[in-house]
Length: 261
Ligand SMILES: NC(=O)c1ccc[n+]([C@@H]2O[C@H](COP(=O)([O-])OP(=O)(O)OC[C@H]3O[C@@H](n4cnc5c(N)ncnc54)[C@H](O)[C@@H]3O)[C@@H](O)[C@H]2O)c1
Image 1 (spheres, rainbow, N blue to C red):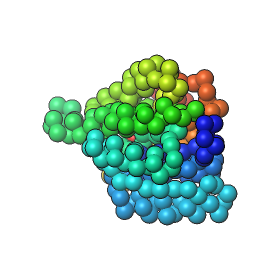
Image 2: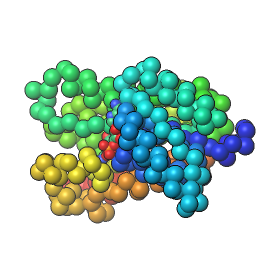
Image 3: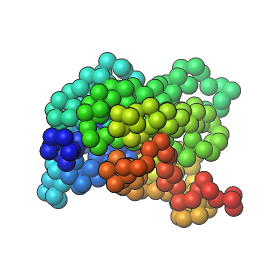
Image 4: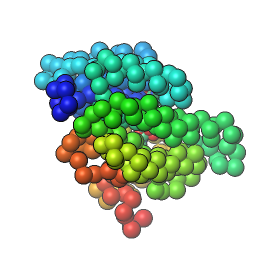
């Protein structure tokens, strides 16, 4: 519960219609929060919300709403955050999880594909944080969790725009954490290794990713499951993490601290 009004804590999750975002929504519901899915795919968001309502039967809050917004569109983001804040009676948590992937040789990358990646991940995260700021200022337990990646630390070839965008998200996370601490808003990130979602399945199917190789370079096993990222997101978003801000938490089985590669 939020301390101020006695209402349920409320979380908005961008990219919540699928993958890690959907798992985060499920975890928040299990913890009794009200949840808003914000996704560019309106139909998928609506279906995901319908599916998640069944969580009520498992003892979760069951309060799930869906809003459609492309995080590249400032007006749409502002309207969606306003709408879900109104509908849920406030907002305590924002998770920036909307994302895309791309592979191309850097020397051949067109401006448009570079800009698209930066717009979705980095500027999209900024837009949503800015839109949620007034509502988060009214919460006693405000937290933002941005979804970074091990790509913020490792130099993946053919992923220059993705690596740059995720590194940018970690800089944004640190800056907002300091600037908004006085307003009671904590800002953190999670930085997963490969997670078993559509992005990973597509890469495996296209032959550009080999799970055995991931296993071989990861000290503690290989691919992460979406629910495992969701649990870390939910912890960082919870009052249990009251003294944690400005950090990026690797969820990578030790990949980024492995000297044996
Ligand atoms: N899957 C991985 O291996 C992995 C690893 C590290 C980090 N991540 C990051 O996790 C996040 C989620 O990835 P995922 O694997 O769950 O992907 P996913 O494709 O399963 O889900 C992404 C969701 O984001 C939505 N989305 C995409 N562009 C959007 C936009 N412009 N506006 C609003 N919504 C948009 C999609 O509709 C979809 O519902 C991304 O930021 C990704 O970079 C993924």
